[in-house]
Image: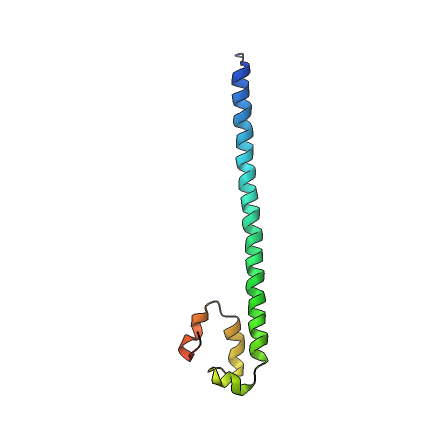
Length: 91
């Protein structure tokens, strides 16, 4: 077995630790992405519920002024794209 000098050993150890850090960084980045996606889904759901509750509290006349029927409220509040209802005059 060849002898390893002190300088070579330091380089090997540094490379090994650097490899661990890069793997750890990848794991931490994945965890961050996971929790960010959870937070984004939570915020989206909260906004959808808020929109639904505001629309459901309006009278039929107010909904009609916006070009909506009471049966459209769920679709409007939970649509992924707000432009889905642009053809009805909603932005």
